Image (cartoon, rainbow over all chains, first blue to last red; front, side, top):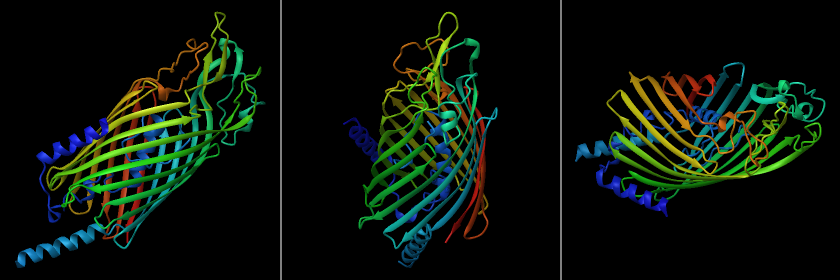
Length: 71
Length: 392
């Protein structure tokens, strides 16, 4: 319930203060410098794997991670 | 009218170019910790291939070669003739368990190990008529003492006609098999028996993405995970029954057989001008082992000309300790759960990140990144990631 509330709140909040970006205005948004992995998904996976094996937390980066015996 | 048509054509062409995401990337990780602790060499490859406009297949393969030493309590007189020291195909020698060991024989230090992990993952994306996406995936990861299979699925739904807002719901389920040795502590501290233990991990995530304007976007994710089964580290020991004469038992650690965690993550990206892009992130995590953590992440990217991208970044991490953690010799007696694993302790960590990315020509890109990770536990690591990406 809290999840639905927070997501709903986020949608309403951002709907109120955002611009309706048209498809032809998305050149900058589509640049690889805007990507979370900066165009290197494998590099990002390496980093996440290091943090997962050295720290006690996980989550927030997508559901598909794969397992390892590095706890 | 003519301008509109030109704009539309230009937009279509640029969109087609941007959607041409067929590539193969080869990356290599070299990771080295201080004090001759863990070293990792990991070559990897990933292929991303579109099939028409509705399907994309992504396949990855990685080999981790790990060697070094982990910090552990052990009986320095353990002769290694029984139990896993000689059994473990991973070569781990972290056992050295015994009962009623003299205080002078209980040591805390490095125990050697080496291992190799081979992992493969496949992700298939299907785009529907309204361009919503369904992603299904499978991961398989094998080590000498650990086998993991993971199935995952995700659905992404566009919330508006301009495709500026989307919501994603995803879940994964992991089946893990762990080979343990010395599972039963006998009079000699180690029975030598081996046993396959099971563990599962369920992960779920709901995320919301929004283009704020033509230069910035944001993503908010809520996540939940539930781990069940054998969650101990089979190689780590604790000290129990510390007596006034200094004698103590060196036995395997014991963790609860379930862990439930939840949290949220926030990511923001902003192109500050033609050259600079800012990435900010925050994650909050909490679990029922009493671990709370906060992660702050920030990167600045600088585009130099058309071919160079320089990145520097900082990541700060802080966590509280698990309620069954203690690093002291004289802490545990008959507590049900006990661990001295530093990863379950209270600590903070900082990562200093840098990367250079160079577009050699229309199809080939090379990258080199060097990063320094330091924990308040005394762990320091230097690692670099280098490789190339070929678009086709």
